[in-house]
Length: 207
Image (cartoon, rainbow, N blue to C red; front, side):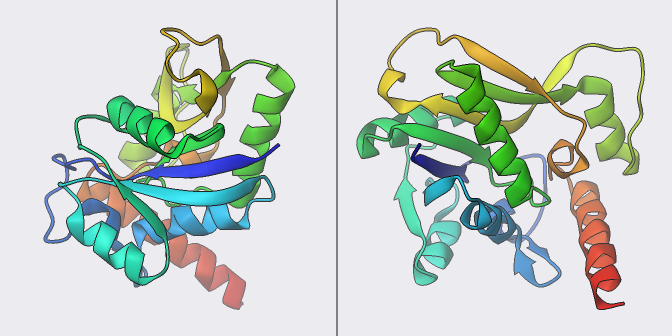
């Protein structure tokens, strides 16, 4: 099955105050969005990678184009609307849509998501995690497990682009408690937390 990886990087990023556009914020000297792109490129299931930018993230588009990344500009209306714009304009088929602000995501996890989608036989899949787990990770950097079954989206979805115009798609819901997708960067505190995880991982590899 051919799957396109679509990175959504056109949001305003209003919850994080910084001099750079959110996708370009650096983690150990590397723009955050490149971690996501590299994970997609390392996946066995992703054939092509496209990044969706907007008027809110012009520098991101400029930076990525200089690196040879396939970039398409969207109206910047909203996550869902911009996703639909890209899928329709590029006539994409099976598409894994992922937010640019989850830099800890791995190629193995992306493969796991695609396999789950294939096995479901459904036209769409949403990756979620328990809301309490997500809040706990973003606030203190470690899982907080509580008796709470409410689920929060993590910013990873798979859909059949050929059915994008249908009002409702039968959707598989994948629940995970993986740190790599539960921790997304919405604030400078989140950014520092991700930096600490990446720095620790790189230190361990050098030992």
